[in-house]
Length: 171
Image 1 (cartoon, one colour):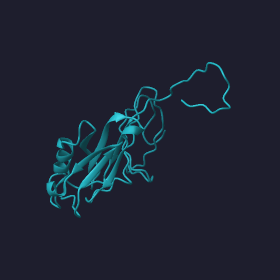
Image 2 (cartoon, helix red, strand yellow):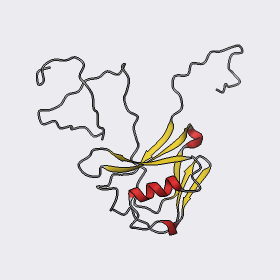
Image 3 (cartoon, one colour):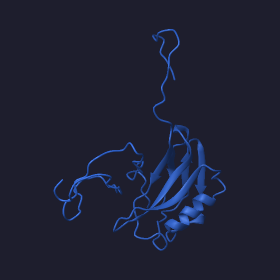
Image 4 (cartoon, one colour):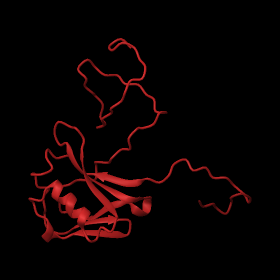
C-alpha cells in the first residue's frame, strides 16, 4: 500500500478484497494433442516468468513436436525451477479442443508469463483462461433455446445444477 504526500496522518485500515492469483495463459485449440505439430520457425522458445527465463532450445523441438511433447519439454526443462506448469486443457469444443495452458506456480505480478521468443504456431495473445465461477453464493440465470445453442460472442462452457426452478420451456 502506498500513500501520497497529501494523505491524512494517522492509522488506517485496509481491507483485502482478493488475494493475488497465479497468472495463466492458453494457446488456441488443436484437434489433437499427440499428432499435430505445433510448428517451429527456427530459434529458441523463450518463456519469461517475471524476471526468470525458461529456454527450450531450437534443437529440442521441431515442426513435428506435438502439444503433448511441448508440455513435457516445458515441465522437464532444467530452466523451469518450479516457475510454471504446462498442461493440456480439453475444453470440450467440437474442433480445436486441446489447448496448451501455462500457469505460474506462484501468484502475483512478479510471476506474470510472457514470451521473449515464440517460434511455434501457438498463439497465446488472444486465449486467456477465465476463472471458474464457484461457490454456494453464485447465482444467475440462463436462457437456452430449444436447440441448445448459444448466440453470444464469448467462448465459455458452464456446467451447473438447477437447485430450484420451473418447467423447461415455460420459466
